[in-house]
Image 1: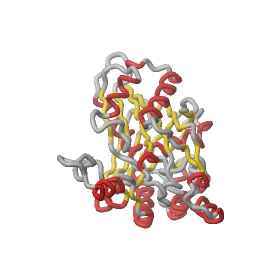
Image 2 (image 1 turned 90 degrees about the horizontal axis):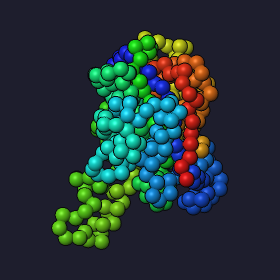
Image 3 (image 1 turned 135 degrees about the horizontal axis):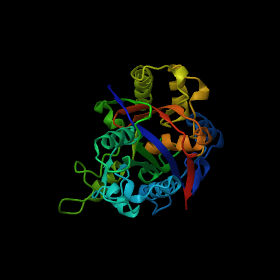
Amino acid sequence: MTEAMMKGVSLRGIRACVPAETRDLAAENIIPDEAERERLMGSIGVRSRHVARPGILTSDLCQKAADGLLDELGWARDTIDVLIMVTQSADYVIPATACALQSRLGLGSCLAFDINLGCSGYAYGLWTAASLMQTLKVAGRPARALVLAGDVSTSKLMEGDRATIPLFGDAGSATALEIDPKADDMFGVFGTDGSGAQHILIEAGGLKHPLLPPKEPHSPERAEELYRKSRLHLNGTEVFNFTLKNVPLLVKGILETANTTIDDVDYVLFHQANLFMLNHLRKKSGLPEDKVPIAMETFGNTSSASIPLTIAARLSDRFETPQSLVMMGFGVGWSWSAIKMTVGPMPAPQVVELA
């Protein structure tokens, strides 16, 4: 694991956005037996999810979150110096979705690029933006950044897949950062183990397994194979084993890096993978239940948006005073990340809907 420390960056605001349409497991018609549905929902902790209708993209959700947050903070659009989009459901192959959003948000010229990460991506995005802000020369004001994070994961699920459809929902988010010499130090821990890449995988769609044929059209059999490989494959057993092996070490690592204990942390925000897994992690890591908020019941697993969404959904009223937060992502890659930082005072984070 890579450990890091940074000075002088404050988190000024968070907003999350979800599609207005909701769907429960009964409506999916993949588990006819009601008792079996109830057992599954009790285990994964998801009773309904917000699902993007056709035509709603991750960029739309993040744009609505960012527009509202910038207006609430009163930040002029031309004062954003860094724009990072963390997503695995980009609008285009090229250009980066961040470039398109720079124009759509009415920002001035700024650093703008995408980070292709999911479960661990939020902390990576925050740390990357904060690091870049430290290097910028900005006259007359502090440097500022927007980190947009989210996915429309439901667009990549195989119809009828009982391993993924009950679990995943869609969401976007916006987080505002600003240089502040008085800010408490930030601490980070990051790591990767690519040997687990095949366990959360969309195999087709890149150059290795292109969906477009090089010359002649694909045969019907090859087209069907590529269609299946273009949907999300999730090996739940391997994900569970990876998480229980690595995340308690990540909890220990971030507390040691920050030279603190859980007694001095107000909340630990885990990526919202599934309830059964989160309860195991909390117990194995020795974390008090009241310090580990869960926001899966009506949102599901929302990829890189899950941490800011949990903050907005469960801790909205807590930021009139500073809160010590540990934010931890883990999963696809294998990739993991953790940040410990003090957040607030700031406006109450909100969850808004996009119809």
